[in-house]
Length: 431
Image 1: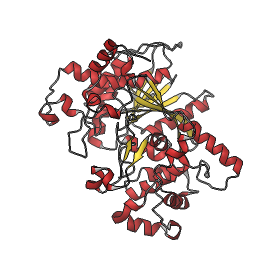
Image 2: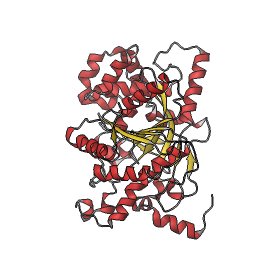
Image 3: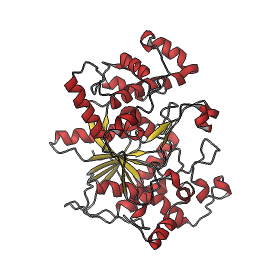
């Protein structure tokens, strides 16, 4: 797709300041859809980017007790991307029921989370394991698993909707007999809501193939802090239980050496960043098919990984890519807007419309989303709910028939406010 000077000027005028300040982060303004990688040979190599061959942990000689006792002071050596630690996690968790694994995923213990994440990441990247972590696979079975992994990871594409126009509208090209999607709010987490919907479709004998979910992603850190901390965000939870971390991780780089990253040097933690040109752009998102490993039964659903406007206050090195200072006075430390409200509102609406654009483009029928940006990113849930209602109001005769706002109340004060805001705007969960 080529662009005239006038078109480029219009697009530039529309782009948020953070994209103009850091153009190397984002895809070039040449196409609405970017597909990475383009060859199957790139996938296995990228998935092994994280492997640290220098960590020769004799995990097979350690038991779970010694792991837990040493974790507090030495957790960095337990790299969830490292083969030996993965093998240890498989030894500990193989054969456990899915309900037991889900309990680990909801644990507030970082050691539990790291063990489970290594288990899921191993299954999501290795062809020598089946989908339950068993390793007694024949060559034919390994070849089949490799094909399945490639199918999942190669489904990933990056949408950059800034190219469509400088308006946040929804020009629909798909059609169905449904006039508008049915929307409701539930107090479930994302995975539980998906399990309920998949079960309903299967029991009714309906095709569950086009069920999607929104990953409230970080635009720059792949899956947030899932590799460095306990992590309580929605993205970190879902990455713990699905193939999402592996698929997105194919487009990221792992900073293992402190000098590679000032933040790593100061925090003593290793972070995973998206590669140049592969950060999630404002209004854009990654789309990919994912599998939920810890669900029983396992199922596939389509992920839309969108990075909603980051309104955290600026902290040098640690929160250096927040957009708050672009919209609020006193370098973002004030709560007073420094831009017209309509401009701020337009920026918030960009991300919501971007999610719906991708869902419509990909033929998604059921979408599980939530209180986007209403956690750490500091969005006003009542304004966010109003904007979702406005964006959904643009959807007519499209493929979407159902939108579930799953707002899990892990933090009573914030979550209750978000739940109340969306419940006020939409109906409660249907009985």
